[in-house]
Image (cartoon, rainbow, N blue to C red; front, top):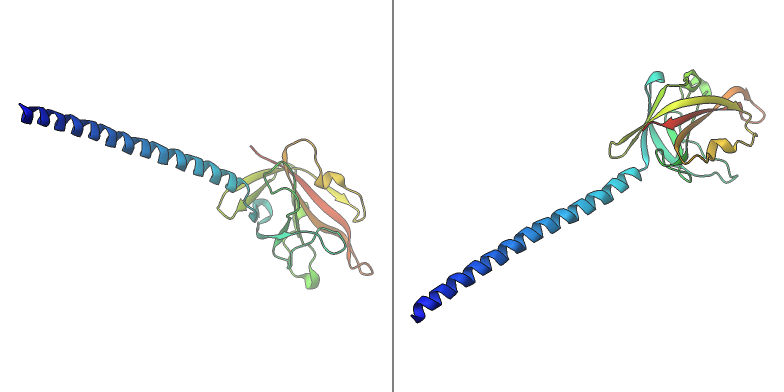
Length: 196
């Protein structure tokens, strides 16, 4: 009788232990999946915070590396080191974030060497611009308008839209070369809006 009771209790204990163990495995699996979902959500945020890596404008055959720049010692937006790359002003929004992301590039490089934005003036309203980050995520923009400014003009609309939307503004030199000032007479700005 004792052996039958012990045997029943042994089986009961094994069954309870099995159920408990299975529950722990299931809970652990669900918990790990939850952690992975949280981690993935975090990485989605990181993707949106990646710095721009390449600028692509198919219409004018641009596929350029993007440098990060800030301000020069005289307080002007810095420019890329050479004629073939562009520069993102990293004190402002990243392309795709709300606000005005600004990318500049050279045109009319010395000795007639080709420069990345030589043909920027050929863009028209409706043309597409693409920014790719280091992880391969692409953000698309569409050209809204193109304006020319005097280099000394106060142009707050280039850097400060207040509509809580994502914009990309491309800037380059244009007009004639002023040898005394060592700069071009105008600045060409292409205003583009993020495509959702």
